[in-house]
Image (cartoon, rainbow, N blue to C red; front, side, top):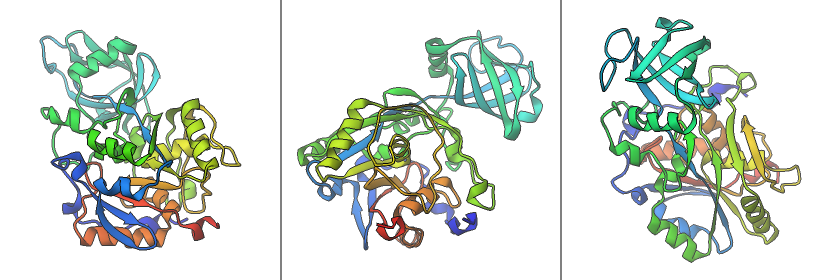
Length: 358
């Protein structure tokens, strides 16, 4: 399909720069046969006892680092040499990461980037698009400890402020479910949930299960190709347990629905599905790219935030709910003041059965 079919005008003042005052004060646009303006607190009333809600428990790493080419000589940001900013986005080994560097043109293979006294990385390779391969002098848990001390949260580029000194983002840009470190972006549909909302869902009889999908930097990358067939997704590591697979399969066997919280949960569920719709345990990478025409096997409902024009995420929701319906929903959201993107509002999507051919 032509990528320009997924384009739309989005006023800059629609983009949320800060989270809502309370997570569960977010607005919810219900996208079904008709559009209905609700709030996230209404979610329990939209579900039925026995429905299964699948959340992503990945935890965002503070993986944005500011360093200097050269050795660090004192605590705090290193001095001397050219300033370099790197955002880690995919682990190759416990001490080697792919990262996006700015400005990458100043880096050469073999350069040392010092982030703090005793904490540095060597540039092992330069790739396309500002990507570099970094080898750190710490690995595994020790590296994660240094990131916690020296890194900042990798806020999306459309949030136009510096997160370096904003400690609140360390809490605000994590979901209630975050427990498995590894993501470089939050599964943002999960940001709306609070203990009170979870209690209401359980009282409604909704079963909550978890998956892990470590969201990569590719979630922010625009689609440069003119046709969707020319775009390749970055692989992301995920895990779906036997407990979650059994819960999803049991729900479907009993005529209940499966609600995916966010595109990451949906992509992992669909990646773990057999042709007959049965879900199996899964552990590995997925590069599933969902566009209109995809035949969904598992997910019956989807909760998701409002996405970028021409993005793979808007293509996914258009595949799920129908392109025309999503264009109408987004036009309504813009007109009525919904907040877009990571810190914005959310929508609950019903499937477009005509598009799916059922």
